Image (cartoon, rainbow, N blue to C red):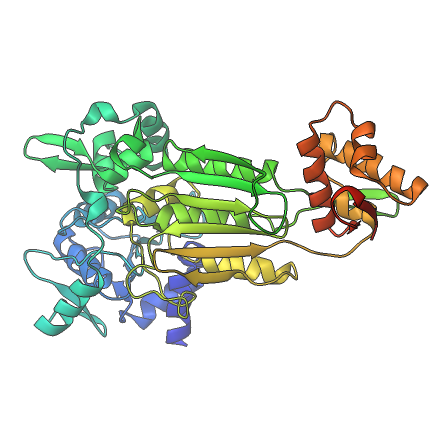
Length: 472
């Protein structure tokens, strides 16, 4: 029972009930749960436990708040905030928060989450600690060396590029973000320092690579290739006719623009049932955003000449991310293991609501596709990157159902003319289609035929000048 409640705490901490909290406190500390009384929860003591959890598999620090205790809840939270800044490097984790039964009543406990798979090795007062069952222990030389080798990627985003300064940040975007995470008596600089977006260099405070990617005025000046190339092809293969857009700006802006590109270039199938029209998206809600956000959050930004590629085909979408899988994560264990190559980027995107900080985005993608009755996402690691392929809903239907798009789409009107002509005359040629749509570019009409064949609505018969099309 103790193991079950611990596992539940690690997966859904924000949903803990008061009963769960009491069971955890009664069970006491474990390899991934630390429980400290308010009196024992000094900043130094909490820092040691947080470092030990971070150097192991992550976990949760709980401080039960006794109603008659002499220590105020806000004081305990302030200590936790200090503890996060005492490690080397600073711990970038979700902000400490209170849980309890009723908002108006005093909180039951303070919670500090330490995500699994952080990219750094952390020390406190010159010592490297890790959890040894239910206690903090100094790491021996061999396991420390192995951990350092495994987590050797996590220093790039915390560095500050030469020549950068505060003026290179967009402070209007920072102000909007800071309002979500500011605590009492906080300064905006404090927030950015905690989140790894600023770093102190002597008396100066300078932006890090993470800060410039998230809030920079011109992020691509500092990180070349930190952009998304979106392309939409008219068939299931790459061809010479396609729409493309190179998306740059800050990482949150890139996510929004890439999502808009996909929405505008992905047809929604429509069905008529009981005289009612309903649009059926080719992909479950949220899956495409999850794939884009994962690529943006976890790509290797040290590969400055590479872009993220989002390729929209008639039957699938491929998201190609520069850099192989990080740390100890492989294609085989991707559903079980966690590792954040860019912890500051991941945490800020989580603060903004783009992702779940604990790293279960892949799980949600798999579950959403399964619930929709669609093929599971395909994951592939290449010599230079990582690819995710999502296959569209290919539900069968009549020719009219297969070609119906969102209302008001010009392509839908052309398809309607094409189908009506075929139903009346039995077939249609390229020349006849041009006569139906005289104001449309011939290349666009050619792509219409390719799209209709790929949708399974029509068949191509013949070759070259003798080509014509019939209903499938």
